[in-house]
Image (cartoon, rainbow, N blue to C red; front, side):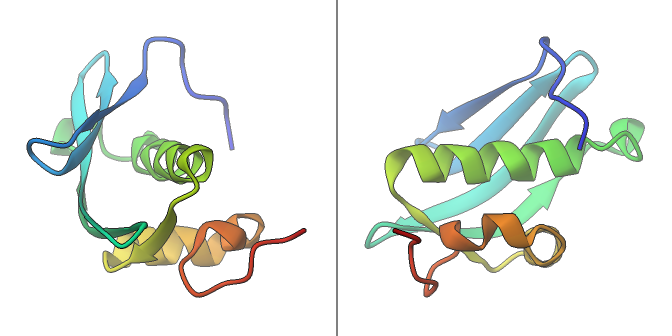
Length: 102
């Protein structure tokens, strides 16, 4: 996966239960709920004008990295996040219900 452009950054907006990836052309977001140390990701959205540029994948990676850094686990209730996680088995340890490697 290509590196995240320096102009992009992930912002956690707990007031609206969203992770927001700010890009030069707008914002992509993932809707979540925190339940018992888990992040239930229920929806992701990339504006139509930004689709096809890998922004959704960079959003997913940033959310997984954020969860990992906080010791949280992800429940992929969104089909995009579930598919992304399936295509990135190296992220399996961040998924809820999976053992954490030693």
